Length: 54
Image 1 (cartoon, helix red, strand yellow):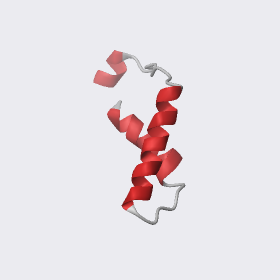
Image 2 (cartoon, rainbow, N blue to C red):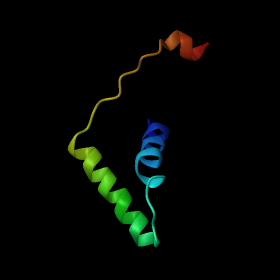
Image 3 (tube, rainbow, N blue to C red):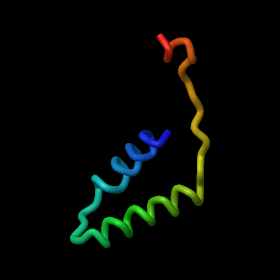
Image 4 (cartoon, rainbow, N blue to C red):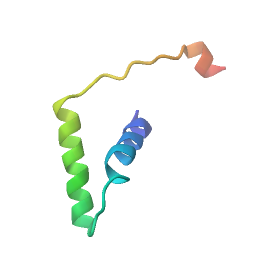
């Protein structure tokens, strides 16, 4: 789940932005997290455990 969250924040916010300082990057990350937490969606596993373990 952690890897999925970092993939999403990277794809949806960090790669699309231009940051002139570390403070700008930190602000963008905090804004993304606040928006994400305002409308959270549960993760639903679609793969079977037997397929994952195989």
